Image (cartoon, rainbow, N blue to C red):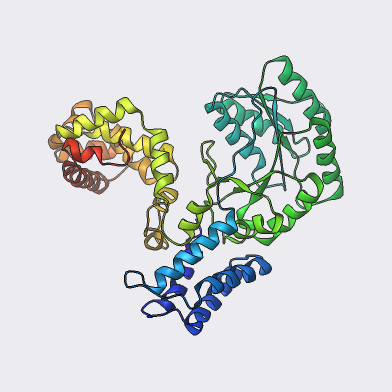
Length: 438
């Protein structure tokens, strides 16, 4: 997420490191470079100009105390201004405590609206809401079927009509929800390849008919200023309540994320960084600012782990580590936990200082599939006692998993090294300090 932007800003900040005082010259040199970086990232011109002016005003002439370098001080000022630019604090979804909460989802075609509807439904289901998905995108081929398939995956009812009438679909979905005790309706509206008057009129009519509790505008983060311009048009038509940034796992330059709130004046409520239905996160401005500045996002990483880990399983693993009995069965379970947390590249990007190291590295999410195949080709005894894996057994495992003997040997070596590392935390007091513990 924004690795290229992070690297360029970090490089620009080097210009003020080693200075004893923040002077007008070293500040202007660095900020001129950062302004160019922001414009290259497709940040709105006015937003970039105002951002640089705010940072310059707060940084100019500040004394540098002994324990803080000029680079650190400017970084802190830039961090604070980024947080302010992105919204200062998280904004929660408005859910009615009684009656039906209606959430209308709007945006351009290809922005990820339909997938987001399913992600949001899954999230709300987990918070004990009874959700109905309404398939009001009646124009895009296979849109209704796509929503039905996603609904099946997350065990959520999808409402649709046999005729292509978006307004009637929305109103009938609300009636159905009331009759069947649903407390939340998510309406997937139609998108277009560009903003047009017919589409705008339709979503405006749907808004009047259903009186939604929330209208969320979906933004493809990879489209830069085009997304910001579309947001302005949609906001003028339906006055939406919040923004959702999608496709942040792609090569997003950052322009849309850094510009849209300031230009439109509406909060970013969620970010989506993958195709899986659980790849949806509440938007925290300070966490994204930290990642943009290459400082990682340990809080989100720990939260992901805590959501995935089972308390009883964590206790069992802790006990096995203390007794030095961690085997391939346990390793396989941990791989499944990691896969549930998201892509490897997104997880690595949350670790402070690691984004720059993995910038040009090929992070292969399929690597875990190969590891799983090798472990699944082992017998029960081999998983429990890796020491018995001689040459013949390794050949058989390689054939059974469709891998090479070198792959098997590499995994065994990595497993051995990992066990040695884990033995350092084998004491109860050490394990209690681990962030992924209970």
